[in-house]
Image 1: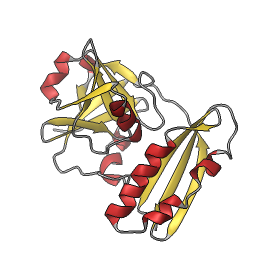
Image 2: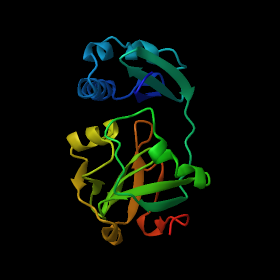
Image 3: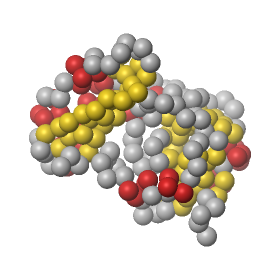
Length: 204
C-alpha cells in the first residue's frame, strides 16, 4: 500500500534535517508518479513532537498514492564489530522502497554488531542501512555511487565536510577508518578500522 518510506531522527525533542527529508520525499513522489502535494500535507514537524524531549527517537513515515501512516520508536545504537564485503552488480535501491528484501536478505546471516558493505560494478556503495564515510588521514570521503543518496550524506556534502569519490575495493588500503552514517547515525557512532573489512564468509 505504501511503496516508499522515510526515517527521521528526533534528538532531544528536535527533528533533524526535516527539509532534506521533505525534498527527498517530493522527488520520490514525482519520480514514482504520484502527487507530490501528498508529501507536503504530511505534518512531519507535528508528528515529531509526540515523543519525549530526551533521547533519540525514530520517526518512520510510510507513504504513497493511497496516503501515509507513521510510527515512532526509541532508537538503540548498536556497535560495529565486523563489516563484510558483498559483490552484487544487480543491486538497485534508488529510493527508500518499503520492500528492502534485496538488501536485508544478507542480514539474516550476520550476528549482532555486523553489517554488509555492498560493492557494485567494482565500486563501494552502502551498507544495508547506511551510507559510508572513509578517512584517508586528512579528510573524509564517501562513495560517489551510493545505492541510496541519504539525507545526512547530502547535508555533509553540501557543507563541504566530505568529498564524493569513486572508491574501488582495492582502494581500501589507502583509508584508515570507515564510519557508517544515516538519518539516525552520526559519524563515529558506528566505526571501525578500514583494514578489518572482510570478505563475506557465506559467499563463494
